[in-house]
Amino acid sequence: MGWMAIRGWALLVYLFMFLPVAVVVLLSFNSSEFGAFPMAGFSFRWFVELANNEAILRAFRTSIILGSLTALISTTFGVLASLALIRYRVPGSNLISTLLIAPILVPEVVLAVALLLFLNFLSINKSFPLLLFGHVIFTLPFVILVVQARLVGIRRDIEEAAMSLGASPVQTFFQITLPLLLPAVLAGGLFAFTISFDDITGTLFWKPGGVETVPTQIFAMLRNSISPEINALGTVMIVLTVGLPLLGAAIARQLARKSGG
Amino acid sequence: MSVERREARQPWILLSPALGAVTLLLFVPLLFIIVYSFWLRTASGADQVGFYLDNWHEALTDRFYRDILLSTLKIAAITTVVCAIAGYPAAYFIARSRGNKAILLLLLMLPFWISYIIRTMSWINILGVSGAFNTILIALGIIDQPIQMLYNQTTVILGLVHFLLPFMILNVFVSLEGIDVTLEDAAHSLGATRWQSFLEVTLPLSLPGLAAGGLLCFVLAAGTYITPLVLGGPRDAMFANLVFEAIITQLNWPLGSALSLMLLVVLGAIVLIYNRYLGMAQLMKGLG
Image (cartoon, rainbow over all chains, first blue to last red):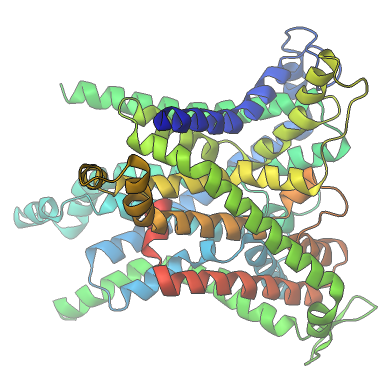
């Protein structure tokens, strides 16, 4: 009886989490003029409008470029730092770990203000580079946490074997370590990209006037009124951020199964 | 150079980009806004460099700021408690379910991948004047005119719970997974009822996860300004909204610095108290 109650409660919690999102998807196919109930009919018109909305397309381009550069830089910095922390005995490594994850311990608003005012003091105004710096520092701790967790599982003796067979340290890194590291690198990069793509708290502080990312564009559109276009944009975002990683994982599993025989 | 010296230097070379970034983009800026908070924004819009206590005096003595700080902490506390009450049984269900644990976990991770702004605005479709609730109530004949259910403190808390619940569930789940299931069976076989063995064995052992989830929920809720802007009314501003106002709207950067530091000190104190008693390891488990 107790277990049934827990199961029912959990079901309610899952409904609570997913029902509003499902309604966004449902309403994005509503053919009515207004972005709300009742459903008048099924149509793709809002997706067509979306594809013709220059501001939204520009926001998508900005978000994708920003997210990709953020992922590239954060992952590079994060992988190097994780290698140092996992592979070497560094004095004070606990303190270093804490310092490196400090950006998530500081409230994002405070981080946003500090970075904006300091870089402005150095004559770096609100601009794309400021956005990029902000996204890098905000995503770096997440990359380090994810990469470190994966790195612990890679055995050191394979590298030692390669070296003892005559490979140079550089050869060992590119031919042994990097391929073993690749899943961690990809996971870290994907994580950084998603966090950057989704960020709005810091982005609203850092973005120059006239530049919008997808979340700030949605936010700006919300100020007017909720239009069916926002629901369509939401649906596209959900498909991109949920569908692509799931598809990626499925393909990876398929490949692994094949290569595993 | 000897091999040992090179070995000793290598990790620092690997660490330097990340440490450099954290130093230049976080620690120095934080030190900078401490200094900046003692400057003065003059009527002309220029900063007067010096050591003025005006901003701190305003931030610390103005009732307006104090009231909003208190109501922010209250909203964060309510959000945390609701997340704990709603999240614990769900986490327990996932941890103890036999069959489809992987699917349940995957579903739990999905909200992390769905944009925060979309999850927040999705409530407008549910509770708005022409949202699902009003449509259903009118169709059932319970009301004739739509009711405005949005833009109050309750909807702000609702939005925050919706955003933060997965953090809570995940942290509790991680700690429940670490508990040996046979402990509960042992208590049971020694004569405890299921409920007793839960209260005496499982619940105490899962408290670290509950605390970690609670800390995350509280700190993230107390630092938000987007949710009140989307789901709150004009009088539902939280402390981070004041920071945003001071920096972006009024362009009073020295005052904005002082307000940011106030928020940092209050939330930092909570993190430090947590760290003192429970340590950061549990938190990292839930995040990684």
